[in-house]
Amino acid sequence: MNRVFIKTYGCQMNERDSEAVAAMLRARGYRIVQDENACDVMLLNTCSVRDMAEQKAIGKAGYVAQRKKRTPRFILGILGCMAQNRGAQLLDALPDVDLIVGTQKFHQVPDHLDNLRAAQAAGAVLPTRIVDIAEEAGSQNTIKDHLLPQDEAGRAGTPLPADAAASGMAALPQVTAFVSIQQGCNMDCAFCIVPKTRGDERSRPMDEIVRECEELADRGVREITLLGQIVTSYGRRDYQHTGGVSPFVQLLERVNALPGIQRIRFTSPHPRGFKDDLVAAYGRLEKLCGYVHLPMQSGSDRILKLMNRPYSRERYKQIVDDLRRVRPDMYFSTDIIVGFPGETAEDFEQTRELFEACNYDMAYIFKYSVRSGTPAAAMGDQVPDEVKEERNQILLRLLEQNSDRRNATLLGTTQEVLVEGPDKKGVQFMGRTRGNRIVHFTAHERLIGELVPVKITRASTAVLYGELALAGVEQ
Ligand code: 5AD
Image (cartoon, rainbow, N blue to C red; front, top):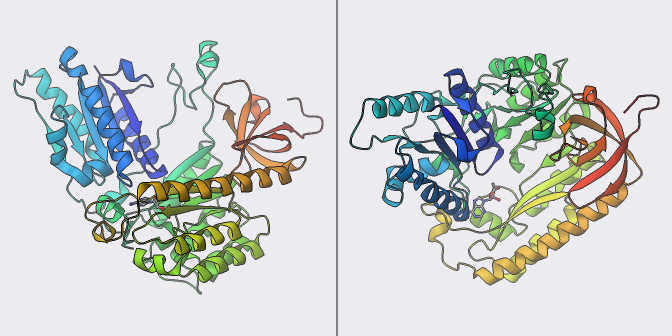
C-alpha cells in the first residue's frame, strides 16, 4: 500500500520538485515505482504555463480517478503549479482527487499522505481531502533532498534499463543533477502565470547551495544545472554586488571552484541579467558550459513593450554578439511566443528576422495561450489560431535548418562529452557535448562520469552519433 508513482508535467523545475518529493517520500518509507499501473498513490506534478498543459493533467486525473471504483483506497494527488493556480476549484471538475498541494508546500506531501492513509485505515466513511496551497516563508529552502537512485537491492545509482537490471547489474552512478537556487519571479511579463503559481522571488542561502553541490560531487555528480524561474536575479535582495559582480555570478564562481564539479549550466535566465559581469564570466569560468538559453519571446520592440519585457531587439542581439565574442563557439537556445495579442505580420517579421540572425541551436516556440488573470488575457486583438500555427511553422522550419547546419559543422570533429549512462535502449551509451547536444556512442560502463573525446560520425536532427577517440583505451 505504499507504492507511489509520480508523473511530472512541464519544466525542469517541476522535475526537480518531483525528485525532491520522491526523496522525502522514500525517506518516510514509501516506495517510488516506475509502473503507473502498479501504484497505490499517484501524484501528478502539474504545469500551468499554457492551457494545454493544464488540460493534459486534468484529462489524466479524470481518467485515473476511475480506479477508485475498483480500488477505493487508491490515492490521487495534484501537486504544483495547477494546484496553486486553481486550488480547491479543481475539486469541481475532479471530485475524486484526494490531495491538492501548491508550489510552496511540496515538503508537506509525506505528512499529507500519512494522514490520508491513517484516515482510510481508521475507516473514514466520507472521503477525506486535503487542500494545501498556502504561502510559506522559507519554502524555497525545502527543495534540497536528492533522490539517490537505487537498484532493486537498494544500492545507490541510476536505475538501469530493464534488461541490464534483469541481468543483475548494480545501479550506476548519477552524473548530472539539478540544484534549485531560487523560486518565484517578480518580472510580471504580461503573458505569464508564473508569478501567480510560484509567488515572489525568494533565493536560497549561497552557502547551502554550495554545500549541496559539494555533496553531489562527493557522490559522483559531475555536472550541475542551477535552477530557478529567474536565476539571473539570484540573491539580489540578500547579497551585495562585490566589485561589480552580481550575487548570481558570485554563486557561479563558487560552484566553479568545487574540485569534483566539471560542468555548470543554469536555467532560466532573463536577458536583463546578462550584464558585463555575467558575459565576462564566460571568459574566465572554465566549467561554465558554452550553452545559453536566452528567452527572446518576441523580436518586435512594440510587442516586447506590450509583453512588459524590459529590453529591445537591439539590446537582445547585442547580448548574443557579446557572448559570441567571449566564446565564439557559444550555443544558444530561446523561447518565443507567436501570436501574442496584437502581433501583426510586421511584428512577426521582426521576430523571424532576429530569430534568423541569432542562429539558434535549439528553440521552444509557443503559440500564445490565454492565461486568465494575466494582463495579456484582457488585451484586445487576440490573434486567430490559424495565424499562430502558420507563424509557429515558419520558425520551426528555420530551427530545423539551423540545427542541420550546426550538425553538419560538427561531423568529423571531436567533442568533449560527459558520459552520463546507457541510452534509452540500453544498447549504447549517451552523453552531452558542452553545447548540450546529445551524443550516442559505444563505451564501457567504467567511463560513466568521465569527460571523453568523441569523434562525431553521424547526425540526426536531435541526436549525434560518434566513436570514442581514446587512443589505446578499450571501449
Ligand atoms: N502562452 C504561450 N507561451 C507562454 N510562455 C509563458 N506564458 C505563455 C503563454 N501564456 C512561454 C514563454 C516562457 C516559457 C516557459 O513559456 O516563452 O519563456
